[in-house]
Image (cartoon, rainbow, N blue to C red; front, side, top):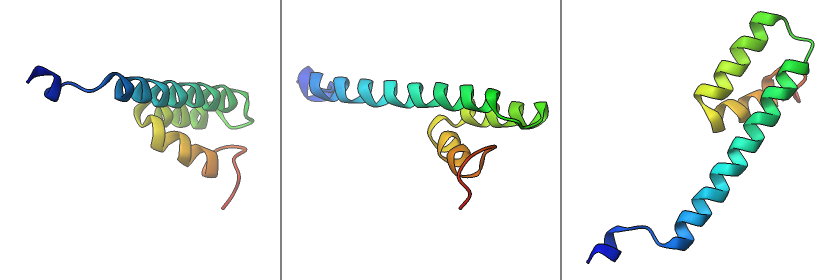
Length: 71
């Protein structure tokens, strides 16, 4: 009965890998933001966006951020 309520080992490993991948990409985005030519205020706002909304913030930064690809 207890096994039915718990996540399987495979699911836990999958979510761990996905979480680690998002963390690594967020760190990459933050480093690129710091290295960009944007003003200090813009850098702080982009970093906060990435930290508060890890996945969405990183995706938005990639397309619209300083030095990002313009859509």
